[in-house]
Amino acid sequence: MAKTSFLIVVAAIVLGVITPSCLSDNILYSGETLSAGESLNYGPYTFIMQQDCNLVLYDVDKPIWASNTGGLARGCHLSMQSDGNLVVYSPSGNRPIWASNTQGENGNYVCIVQKDRNVVIYGTARWATGTYTGTVGISGFATGMAGIIKSVTDKSAK
Image 1 (cartoon, rainbow, N blue to C red):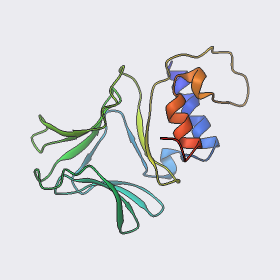
Image 2 (image 1 turned 135 degrees about the vertical axis):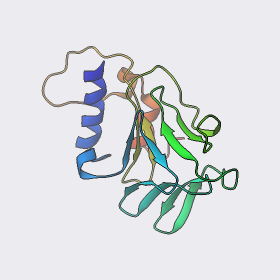
Image 3 (image 1 turned 90 degrees about the vertical axis):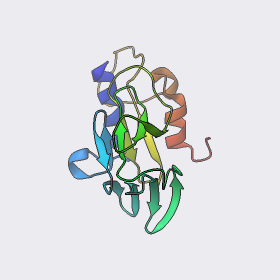
Image 4 (image 1 turned 30 degrees about the vertical axis):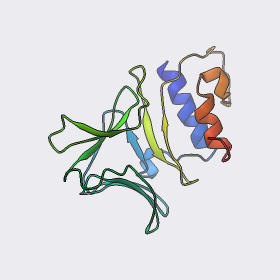
């Protein structure tokens, strides 16, 4: 399974959807957190855990998405959990104040700020034949990630 997850991320890199983490700071891995004031960045896009506990995506200086949790506390942190859920926690760390509600099986997940201005959570593959050779190709339906793959490749997808 780990090999399949790795291949999905490699395919996303090849397709230009993401860049390797060693070249950028746009990826939050399972088990990692963003403290208040820290951010993920890709070009003009900044996904920041603000001091006021609001999680915001900026295009240069213009906010284009927010968790609408500003003012609920100060000093929250964002966690990419090993179950695939992205969660803003109160400063004490024991109370979630916002979540992506994407929890599933424990595995390897990443939250990525992409070059298309989208922030996406990619996760553990659910099934694969294991018969690949050479260049990796992804079918969203074969990996069980059809909605994610479609949202990356089709901007009209909801």
